Amino acid sequence: MMRISKRATSCIASMLIALGAIAQSNGSIDAQMLKELSDSYKPTKAEKALQNVMLNNNVNSMALNQENQNEMETYFSHSVKSKGISNQESSGRCWLFTGMNVMRAKMIAEQNLGVFEFSQVYNFFFDQLEKANLFLQGIIDTRKKPFDDRTVEWLFKNPLSDGGTFTGVADNIAKYGVVPKSVMKESYTSNHTATFNSLLKRKLREYGIRLRNASDEGKKEKDLLNMKKEQLKEVYRMLATVYGVPPTEFTWAPKDSNGKYREEPQKYTPQSFYQKYIGWDLRNNYVMLMNDPTRPYWKSYEIEYDRHMHDGQNWLYVNLPLEDIKEMAIASIKDSTMMYFSCDVGKFLDSKRGLLDLDNYDYESIFDVEFGMDKRERIMTFDSGSSHAMTLMAVDLDKDGKPLKWQVENSWGANSGHRGTIIMTDEWFDEYMFRLVVDKKYVPAKVLEVLKEKPTKLPAWDPMFTPEE
Image (cartoon, rainbow, N blue to C red; front, top):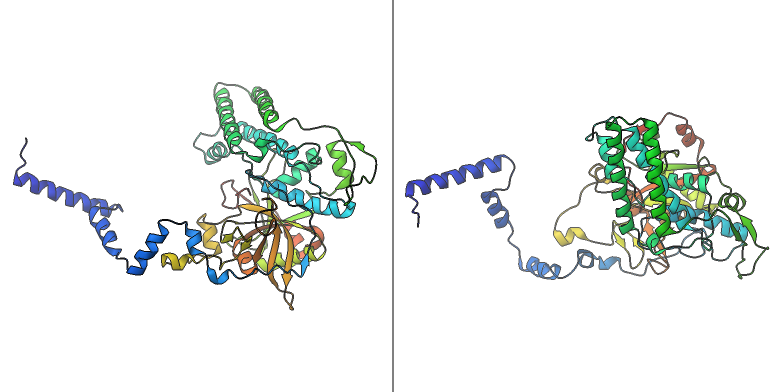
């Protein structure tokens, strides 16, 4: 057994102390700091009891504010009627469901229909095909840039997703039309997108590498475009395998609220069906509004690559104070018109009751800390962003016309939340609302004037590029 001299032991101890000092000076947690951190935690009996409970329960159940558990007020002074709650199930297609729910409500009212839905999987098929093309074309367009270029890196990190925005809805429908759900029904994979989505992204990244390698080997752009077309053929085949083949023609007739046919069935294409029963210009008749306090208000912004197809439009929005956005939302609801609405739905959501309220959970008392960031700071630090789209359908106004609470139609099924809807307090709306899409007829002239100015273009990695899921 080797013996260590006292002198050597002393040297080793001195070295460890020195290393500890160096580690601490470099910002690391050394033994001394760890001891100070550990010594600082001296729980009281009450804190120990809380710890015992928390070790066996989730945070939300323990932080649930019992003072806010009284019966929820569900009265709304102004509301748009809805028939049937849709269900995106385990997919990130809220943006598509929401956009279609806005159209569906209008079509049901105008045609006096019973329960009716558009086929979400029909448009989703083309959404995924178009996003694949957008990515591959982006790789071709950036082929001369180094692999560690930020745009190239962003493309490979985000080849496609099942999330999106209203702009994607507008471009998709303008190009491909719509069909009733009875013509192309959901598949298992359209309702459970995660596995296939990951496989498709993997394949697209492989295609991207092949395109860059071919470019490095001297292939011309024409050759790369031909490669891309062959790659898209395989993408189409993969999509058709799990979603089915989209119809190009179908027969359909409307049924009234009693389930009786109102006319004889007729043949339609997806485009002719859209023109007959909807016919709106989703691209040009709507204004996208944003509340982003990190940037100047009364300015328009565009985000690069924040679109769903290569020949589509980037997300273009007007950044406005909340009060101006609310005025337009109220005007739309009063005129029985639903709106595409998105927010950070995971914050303070009581999913059982379907309530978004800042008082739902008392996290500060549980941990004895204060969460002090405001909306601007939460956005800047990526703590909050638009995560989910729903259909804004109701508002409750006080005697002075000020909103007390809002209601959205969700796409999580009729058994979720409050009968398939979510109610939010106006205070929660202020903190976690982000996007609203409004028909131009409810938009004041001063807002439309902003759209005439050249928008500020933001990079794809901007915090506001967060596709709703």
